[in-house]
Image (cartoon, rainbow, N blue to C red; front, top):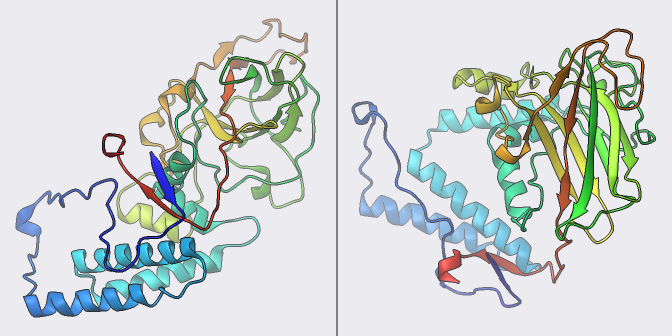
Length: 344
């Protein structure tokens, strides 16, 4: 539960911590260099934190003041907890520099970094609070592109991208079960080789499109049966994953962004049941409710719309979507403090 107030905490008021900070888990105490910090040293470090936090007191925006002061406290706490060395600090600076150098209009390394740290999913969770039966949200990912082509109901969004044909259908409803006619359904995915169209190196548009639901809230289209692929790992984020022994693989998925008037826009995926990477998705995007059965169909099996697939295997999946109502928007220039439900 989130509590907001038009009056920001001032002075030395101690802000509540949510969730509570957990003690550090030390897997191997014998390999831990315990550093005893003297009272004099602790006072020196604390004084610096207080000085930097106070430097933001003059911010005209109360919300910006809260963000900068909280960020300062948490960053300093990290440095002090792990006793960050100057060499490690320099390595971190160079890592961020490298992330900036490799970023361009088609590759967003900082989004990738946010994804693999779970920060993207945490932000999604905070901004998409549970609402009854509303469909769960997941990460946007770095490969969404504005201006996708529109297809008709039952159209093909692959536009020639390589992959096994997949029939996707479902309905879009509100939280009370009413169909949402004219809802916009945006879809995009990688081809069977794990590449999005923006990675092709030309100006082709493939495996992305948008369509609108009919009067019954229904949608249907042809796409590609999702396959697993690695996130871009030839840059600094990939090197970081390798250093910590983590796989860059994303589990098989199909992206959706669904919007309708008065509804909260939903950004989500559906995931292929049985994919070997469901339990180790590199960006922590998997939700149990979004794992779907992509039913394999043998070549020659009649398709729902009578399409001739030239004797190819295909699959089909159903994904019914429930949108939450759009939250009321208040004054954005306020402190936002989360408290546990039992403490509210």
